[in-house]
Amino acid sequence: GQQVMQIPQYQHVQEGEDFTTYCNSSTTLSNIQWYKQRPGGHPVFLIQLVKSGEVKKQKRLTFQFGEAKKNSSLHITATQTTDVGTYFCASTTSGTYKYIFGTGTRLKVLA
Amino acid sequence: NAGVTQTPKFRILKIGQSMTLQCTQDMNHNYMYWYRQDPGMGLKLIYYSVGAGITDKGEVPNGYNVSRSTTEDFPLRLELAAPSQTSVYFCASSYSPPSGVYYEQYFGPGTRLTVT
Image 1 (cartoon, each protein chain N blue to C red):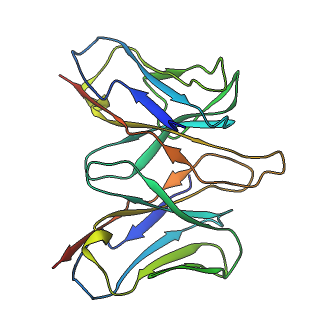
Image 2 (cartoon, chains in turn cyan, purple):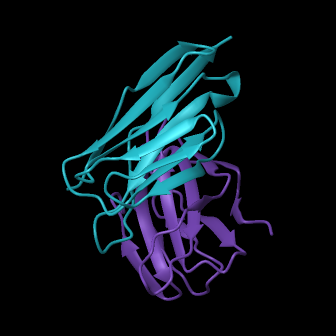
């Protein structure tokens, strides 16, 4: 079945450093959604990418969808302590609404 | 709008007991989902519904049942609880028009379930 792998599993950075998490699939994806989950909280939607090669920015966050629609990345520039949490990618295969979530990347920011 | 609400927030069950996790959304979303999240792991889809009266299995449906009699409510039933069902359960909803465009999922606060 479809699997979505996310790397790295954990990342500790000093405040002000950059951070990137990658999401990889063996099958072509219809879309990619990115969510952030604070410790003890619930996932909160960040963004969705649907087009091949798409790049979207939200302030310090940059999201990319691969040309083959099999991978995606989330890059945070100059991390802040408010960026702490686990970042998940999620996707479906064409024609379904069965979402598969990545394993998540847990980000810790050291002040 | 309250968004997606879930009850209870916490529950401890003994092995073999049954219970229903409640989920309600007030956004008139047609799609609703149940996920479980084990400690330090990602979310796994249990069941989902594309509208009232229509449900379908997700990745890990065994040991669970759902129903969707109204647009707003999507309860998850656990029969014969087992320790392997200890997890945090999230309900989510989203809107999708007939064109098939995907939209964001809104998550409830979760129910933390322990089976001992």
